[in-house]
Every structure is written in structure tokens, then in C-alpha cells.
Length: 357
Image (tube, rainbow, N blue to C red):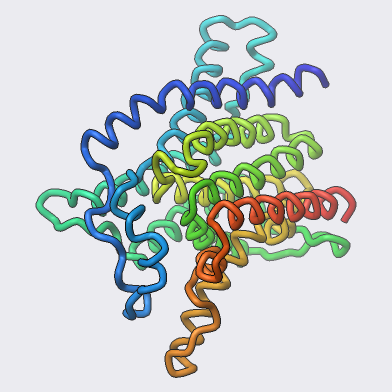
């Protein structure tokens, strides 16, 4: 038991301090090369203007670097690989027990983290600088969703064919057989979780919410004796806290796509790893634990549908939801902290359901 606890908290601590240590280098790179948008967003997804959003965030949009999410996935992956390499070169019993890179629990989540990070990084770079003569702008939403769906499809094949997962578990109802429908279900969940990445819009908001979510899944994995998966979630929390240290207002940089795509893809895989694979309820509690992401996505969908079918009339002053509260006059820090509070409560509720449901 003691070594399991150390196995979880040691990577978290190392990842945090590593992220803190590498931030000055990243900061110098981002600011010296002006790695921020050159023009604030003026068009919403429905083709209309964004005057309220511009009044709230126009200056920050063009003056704060993107790509801050590099701190999260780089510190987490380096920590994970460093422990694995150390255990290989110094094969002591203690280091072997601390190594949490395993085929059955963490290979796939790590792959999702790195693939999402790379694709997101390319998108961020294209949005800022353009690539090979292309104008700046990044990948379109349809292209990003296609990439996420494709990665989700590959992961679904792994679960279905390699791990032979064909079910999901519902609280108080038990196992639900999906058969081959597990594959499209996996892809749908992956895309839905990715859509929650739009929560990255206020200093400190996304970092705090994702820290809470991954902490909750670390507890669930530990409860289900998935110690390696719990350590993996914890090492991501360490990277997130390092990022959050510098993202608290005024933000030094934004998480942007390289962080949000990496985290959302990884979260989807982690939730499935904590589901039928371990006789758990990782998917059923995902909407509860990640409710701030769900609410953010739904607010965007409701706003778009309302403007389309109600002759341009809006439900919210501006979407996503956190910007609506800003438009009402709430200071950004108040919005962020109240989201954190709601995030903690939702995480606790999800843990209760996961453990007793």
C-alpha cells in the first residue's frame, strides 16, 4: 500500500517541478518569436460577428502566447519515460515497483497524449505562422474533429480487438453489452470529450478544471487497483499544476490546442480504461466528473441552434458559458474560481457514484 501511494505521488511531484523548471525556456521561445495570434477572432462558427467576445478578450487574444500546453504533456511524458529508463538501467526492486509504463494500463493513454499534443502543436503553429507558405489560420474545426475521430477509431480498435472490450458499465444497472457498436460509441465519446476543450478561454480555467478531473480519475483507478493508471493520471496532474502556476491571471501563456487536444483525447482513453477493463464505471461517471466540460459544450450547441432556428436570437450573451458570465459583469477570476468549486463538487459526486453505484 505504501509503495503504491509513493508510486502515485512521486511522479506528480517530479512532473510539477520539471514543468516549473522548463517554463522559463518555453517562455523565452514563445515571447521572442511572438507566438500569439496576430489578429483577434471576429467571426463566430455560425459566420456572425463576435463584438461581445472582442470587448472582453481582444487585447489578450493578440498579446498572450499560445502553446503553453507543451508544459503539461512534455513534463508528464519526460517524467514517465525517465522513471521507466531509470528502472531499466538500475533494475532494483524499488525502481521496478515505481515504474508505471505498462502495456495493459498506460501505453494507450500515453500514445493518446502524445498524438493529441503533436496534432495540436501543428495546428497552433499553423494558426500563428502558417506552414510551407500557407496563410496563418490553423486547421478548421471539421478537420480537427476528423483527426480526433480517427484517433478515437484507432483506440477503439485496440480496445475491441486487443483488449476484447465489448461492454460498458452503468451505475446500479450493471454491464451493458454493446458488441461491435462499442467502436462507434468509443469514437462518439472521444469527439464529445474533445468538444469540451473550448473551456480554454479564461486565465486558469482549463488548467484547474482538468487538474480536478484527472485527480478524480487517479482516485478511481487507485480504488480499482489500477495503480499504473492512477500514477499516469497523477503525472498529468503534476504537469497541469505547473502550467496552472503560470496560467493564473495574468496568464503568461495559453494552453491552446496542443494542450486541450492532448488532454481531451487522453481523458477519453483513461475513462474507458477505468470502465469495463477494470469492472469499473469510468464512462458512466465521465459526464458527472467532467460536467464543467459538458456544460461548456452544451452552451455552444444551444447558442448555435438558437441563432439558427430562432432567427438569430441568442440564449446566452456570448458562448461558451464562461464568457456569458463575464459578459454579465463577473470578473474573470470569479468565473474561474466558481468553476473550480463546481468542478470539485462534481468530481466528488462522480467518485461516490463510481465507488458505490
